[in-house]
Image (cartoon, rainbow, N blue to C red; front, side):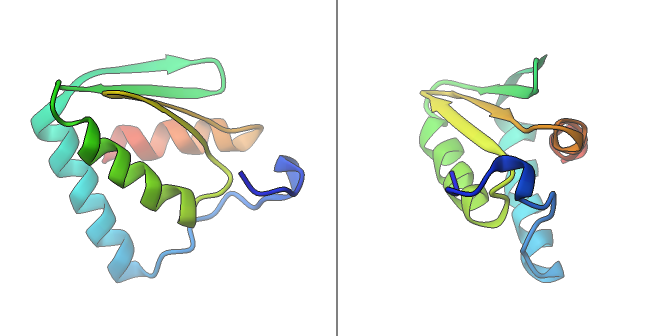
Length: 99
């Protein structure tokens, strides 16, 4: 997490349009083939994928940490908990529901 106050981090993705499309394709592939659960939680969302796909999930989360520092990610095996403050919570839920 960035050392700045989380309220100071803009709710924005730093990817170019082409890179964003590629990232969405990667997430869509993982979630279409492996998603077991998508659970709303206080502050965000938890995704759980099939056993054996945790490394793919972790690789995507590592990429997201670079372009979306307003999201806090916690990976635990085949699940990731993603949270954000303020308007970020709704943006996060929307983003990872439409992928």
